[in-house]
Length: 442
Image 1 (cartoon, one colour):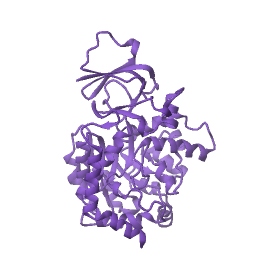
Image 2 (cartoon, helix red, strand yellow):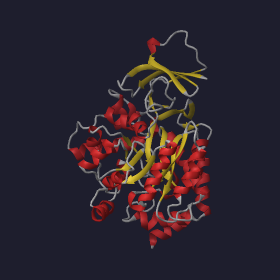
Image 3 (cartoon, one colour):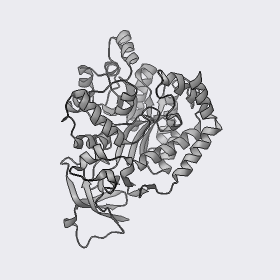
Image 4 (cartoon, one colour):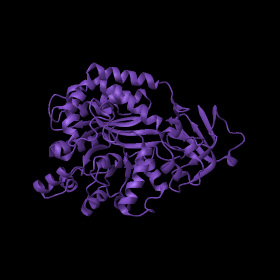
């Protein structure tokens, strides 16, 4: 079915950063056919459905390069406590997380992302088969990666068992047009050299990106300095696992040599400014990464780390923190930040030929931001409006692979109240809230 979007302010995010202040977009099935100015739209154009954007801003769907969608139940739990991960999250996860809770959490998280204009995400968690099924059901686009860690987890009975899980999981999703399955060693400090190498080999075998947390924690930096006289990035380079397929999450503490290595091996970086600064870990050297030609995209981290799954909040935080960190108001113009949220994220996931810009032949993943709300007037610069004025509530319509998944700020085919009810029921079955409150009182 051919769909025509007319009267839209189109931001293509292509190499030339073309925009059409009064433009049209024509799609056919899953792909974009063409985009241009309204006055160049042929009179005899054929379409099955026409949507009047009424001046809404049309741009590519946003990409969340790093998250943990199964962790919605932990949102707002012990946010201001030190050592929160080990004190609350890991114990509650081991006690409460199961297939149903992970699945219902995933659907709720994906709904939150879609309503906020996120059309593609890279997830690292447990029960990834169920999470992939949730993404498929919600018609989202994503990479779902099973966590590998040196302890027994909620879905595998032995340390490092996530690797074998991934061996079974990845082939099941080969050939799917929207979902990729992968593997995600938790971090270099929580896996053996052999497991990291096997994860890299598995990624190469199936030609999928893989992910790990790296250069994120102070204790991590100290550990590698004391035990190896190296940074974590130098360690990964020495064991031979840096490659264009690796998405390195966080990368807060980088040396000049680390940046040289990331560039040499074309490693991609998922930057989570919200979670990183909320946890007081620091501000990554993104300007230096981009100057070196390293692909960087924005990520929210999990909903228990950054508390939100929308990229609007990350763009605003990115601008505020990096300008302050660099003491330079002119650093990272708004258009550059929108690039990080769209085509930049697509490059991080190795999907820049499929998504991330409005170009003929690419997947029809795009969103419409209404400009009628009080916070969206006036607009002198659409990129500035997106970064500094807009929020997730301005997302009107969302298309993924040519299919409308959000229309008029409502999910298509799913009910938000029902998704919340299903998640609440799954949480209640394991007495999640009671156990969480008890843990906080101890």
